[in-house]
Image 1: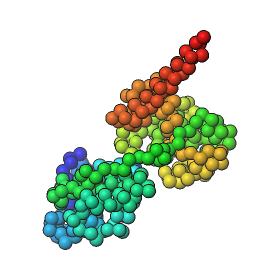
Image 2: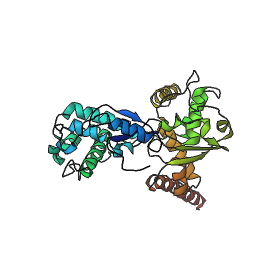
Image 3: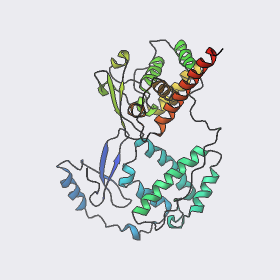
Image 4: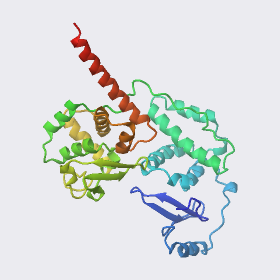
Amino acid sequence: MPRKLPLHVVRDRSRHGKIRFYFRVGLGKRTRLPDINDPAFRAAYMACLGAGVPEPTISKRVERTLAALIDQYRDSARWAELSPATQKQRRNIFAHVIKEAGDFPYREITPEDLKAARERRKDTPAQARNFLDAMRGLFRWAHEAGLVEVDPSEGVKNPRKSRSEGGFKVWSDADVEAYRARWGAETVQRRWLDVLLATGVRRGDAVRLHSDQVRDGWLEIKTEKNGMLVYVPLPAELAAIQGWFIVGETGKPLTKESFGNAFRVACLAAGIDKSAHGLRKLAATRAAEQGLSVAELEALFGWSGGTMASHYTKAANRKTLAQSGARKMHKAP
């Protein structure tokens, strides 16, 4: 797929990961086009060009507000490269930004403005980090596009994670047994647990699992968050599922949000105040304790760069060394 698109052609990614192309002039109406590699693309594109559309000049637009910049960013190829999950998160962030400062001239935004916005979110460090990540993406693109001379986000640091943040709580083996005791083998709630624990995928990927993605007992899926391709061996009972893996009481598939809510209700009914992501952590912990390497963990869990996988292998190694040391201590006279 060519990276440089024809004039007035923009692309985005659907929530299912499919790339779509549109004809759009400035902030005007979008017209759907065939895939850029489709022979019908050129005729449709030329028809849109011949409709007498005005020629915009981005650098001379009257719209020099932050809201207009965000709108242009969301029409860019850089935005289209983001995962659907990241796009959704940043759309929500930008909606608040536009409400608070949408009319502000974006070229007048300074690092001090972004630092002040970070400080206003100091009580919720995770939100502050997500806000800064979104603004960095916006201004790095704007700088590359020549819309700003200086990137105001450069050098603005994320707040440090506090010890009290902690992240998602890891499930214990006792939690798993308590959940299974509450939800019988024939319930959809039990299947949710089995799928999450056996695959180790994130909640957003779990609701996308389908029997079409299974080959010879192996699950193959491209992750929603970073587009990494992961391969997971499935136990026989899961490999035999036909259709969607995650379904509700009616047998219909669930969305990421509805599944999250339903799973939390099921967990609380079992006396467990933990999340689906905590099961992913348990699956990774178990895999590391079985001796999987960093590369093997990354292939199973869709990580890259070694950081996350190393975290689990180091923890597993410490546990193994502690157990070895304890055995030696008990043998000592």
